[in-house]
Length: 109
Image 1 (cartoon, rainbow, N blue to C red):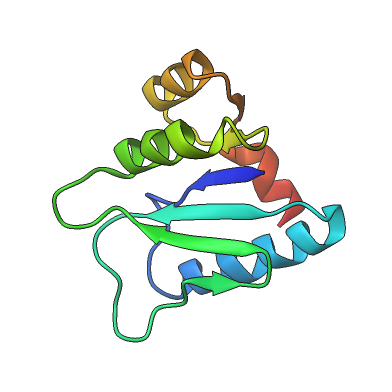
Image 2 (image 1 turned 90 degrees about the vertical axis):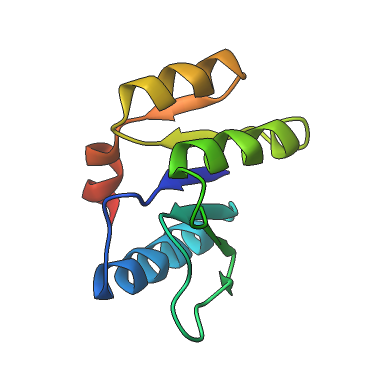
């Protein structure tokens, strides 16, 4: 599973990212998830195809939400965290996840 840090994606870029991840998930037959900062706007997508969409909420960071997801999901399925945040990457590795820098994913999108 790809778990994508969407903390620097805003506005219509969020929808494009979710759509591209859905295409990628379908191509690889692999579920994905993305975490955006803040709270969802009106009628936000919670899922598109094999992509789950999470929001960090008003009082949490995207990195913290990703680590929470890792705590629950890593036991079930191997996870690759896609982020450019070095601290988050190190924390994810310590929890057993693989890490890929965001620019490698951007080439697939």
